[in-house]
Length: 594
Ligand code: PEP
Ligand code: MG
Image (cartoon, rainbow, N blue to C red; front, side):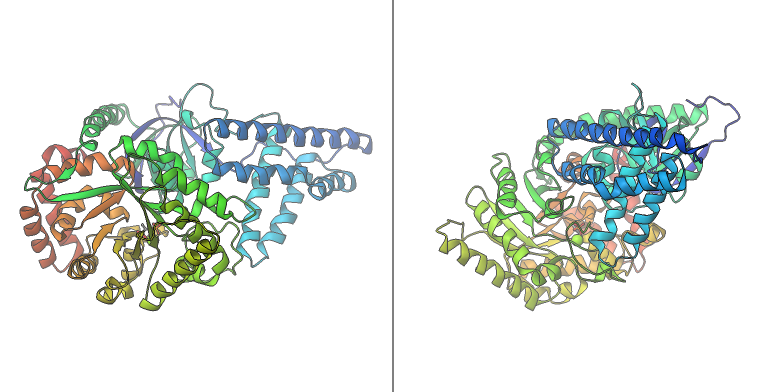
């Protein structure tokens, strides 16, 4: 721990994406940091030993990766195992190894230097490739090189592994799911990163691991060093590096409160989300991995309101088969504690990882070939998933949800594919549940405008506010420089949501919300006032949201909504709602004010 009294306390503001407070020692996670030395070999006689040293480091790296895989399998974390397969393949690749050995021999440099030359060579190749799948492989080579470099330097593991018994706060430029999969998760207290936004994958992963996280800090990696003391306040979106003793004390107090409240909230998770005047809201959970289901149920999820299936496609070189999909979905829909599971068809593209996706780099991927557009172009991949969802439907109540619908033609085409998938299964004599509900995600403004027409086509709507806000306010959801503009309480957003709910109800279909707004306690009175039928959120948010709903009334919420809709600006709406919540739930919101 840095005990230097002259060290300056630094407070950085970012985006709090996973609640809670972490206090501990900072551990910088740099994919290519280094105390690495590069030197020319004194004479040729040293070459054979240098080659041997490199080969030994290759072997060591492979053994370490195999150990990581074993640990992941033991912890039943399956998806990241695939990425490690890729890394092992790189380590075993003869061309990769021989290129480095040739550099050692021909240039007379040490193994580290030769390895950097190999990496530069691969990076140059990858970066010049238009195909996203291939170009993203550069990071895999980089990761493998880092591991070999560490082994060459005698440091057996990267920083995050090498934390001894003390838990640490990980500070990095960015943390990919692959990085987290390779960390000792039980030794991690929280995350602070330079980049990322509320719905970036760093954020989603942190929430699913229940670790406090602040992202979008811009330059935390410049200011925080390994061993510095650091506080991550994921609730307020603040990071304090080297806190003064009294700041530290205050945060320790806050952390105790937060944890006590968490325990207390858990009790609310078990209760229905029923207002004091008997308005009932279904509360679901958003998941990315099957492994999250127990935690979702423990926090009070009644259903899976959004299963993002993208992770089935990433970190593997081949495409998931119908059986892969089916086995996975079976584990979700057969859970007896869930009333239903909403499986969203893959939403690849945009800020999601591309995995196998063979698509050209797009100038504007969020508005490009993503989600349903991509599905309708890659019909075989799409129908493989659709058949698996149909097959799962007989095992437990299943709903299917199509992402990023922007027109009636699109939903009709998606339904036509679904029908074809059903026919194909029929020919194979496989049973399906023909009552499976079909839903459209409402996350594109054009869909909102024609909500009345779309409502005739589906059984339910699910509002994806993460994208709806992005598209309606024209702000890239992953761009940390625009975070200040990302405002769920913007009058335009409120009007769009209201229109969706009203049109759904006119058509007598249900309407859910599965964007992050659904789990934001401050937004609850306006969402209740609109009479949403379901809210689906990250599991950590559920108990607190249920508590607020249980202590609210529909009648009062409608008045709040009416007043909120009367303002012209987002700051007016926000300050009105904030003041109301502070008065109405002083205990709940006081801590956030502090
Ligand atoms: C949304 O857009 O609000 C949503 C829930 O989907 P995703 O975050 O996966 O785009
Ligand atoms: Mg979306």
